[in-house]
Amino acid sequence: MNPLNILIVEDEFLVADYLSDLVRQAGHRVVGVVDCAEDALNGAGDFDVAILDIRLRGQLDGIQLAERLRQARPGKRHIYISGSSDPATRERAYATSPLAFLQKPIRPGELWEALAGAA
Amino acid sequence: MKILAVDDDPDTRALVVRSLRQEFGSDIELHEAIDASQLTEALEGAAPDVLISDFDLRWSDGFEVLAKVKAAAPDCCCVMFTGTGNEELAVRALKSGFDDYVVKSALQLRRLATTVRAAYERAERTRALARDRDILLRELYHRVHNNLQIVISLVMRTSRTLEHPADREKLEALCARVVAISMLQEEFYRSERLDAVPFGNYLTRLAEQQVGLADDVALEMRLEDVQLPVQSALPVALVANEMLTNAMKHAFASGGPGKLIVTLERRGPEVALAVTDRRTPAAASASASARAPATVRNPGFGMELMEGLARQVRGRVEHEIHEDGRTTRLTLPL
Image 1 (cartoon, each protein chain N blue to C red):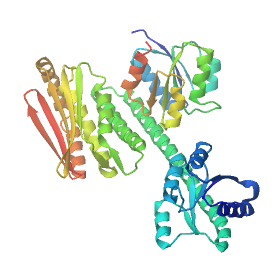
Image 2: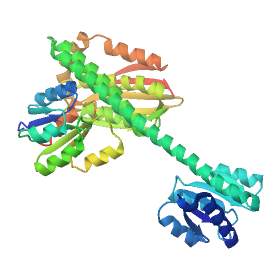
Image 3: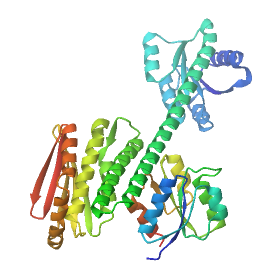
């Protein structure tokens, strides 16, 4: 398996920390942790997969961020994590072709499986 | 507001239109239907907000019109306006889904317009309440899941500071239990019922998540359609989680090959939930050694948990040992 470079966009410090742990446990690298879409668009370095919380601080939510990332950086993949699973949000999310849409609390196996799909 | 008036008497329609214009002025968009094809046509465009229908139509009756309109516009509020009425018809109209009933007469004509206004405003308020409830419910679920995620993150961060693998394992098991609870919450949200949950769906998701990580373990689900009420769903979910964890940890500690069978069935007035592990001979001898220390290290917490939760739902837990594995079964009254 190729180790992936992972960008984490999550505004809860504890959750971001937990996600980083899970990513490293699966043998991948965390190349950045930011807490809003704006920082992800402006400051993020090179990554293969972005793990995006849907509700974020700032003007854009995770789905809008994914739309912009797809335009700005074609070929990059993303995984959503979200506390909500209402059908309207899911529909918007799936329209951006994510690797996965994971419901919080994250089941480690599901995250690893989604990452394995990109490796 | 879009109003659809269905009546095959042109004089009545003219009176209805005049009465509505007096009450609402140009705030309304009025459509009239005098036969089936005009009704179909009217329903093909934007959905009406209000229906005013006669009962006695040459080509149909008010109840058929109501059914057609509700099928196309479920939120439309409907008023029956009829000259052939009696008390019996009025009761039937209200029971069938009409919001109000007005008898045709010169005096009642003015009442028709105020009735339409009142019915429309009532329907608006109901819709607003439903919207608020949906928003509140979504927000609540979001927070529950988010907060459980934070709890798990905290526990796992604490786990990193522990020295002994056995201690870390206990905290991981704790997180798995929290995840099992949150998955149940999710099932309630999906089922659109707040008082019961289709338990087979939950078991499938829980089992797939637990077995998904193991190599060479086939999962077989034998599920009857069982709805568990909210009071017993949570304890049963936690028992199911223990059963699955035990089977994976003890029978398949070093993977398969083997099979995990999950059954959910009605037995008379009771429901039985069972998890059976069946190991192929090679796996059986491999896990025999792995199994003993795990059981000794934690002699009874999982078991205690299962027994206590089973008592809570007035049920019982039984264990059967087979040649190639074992079954754990929870039986509880439905």
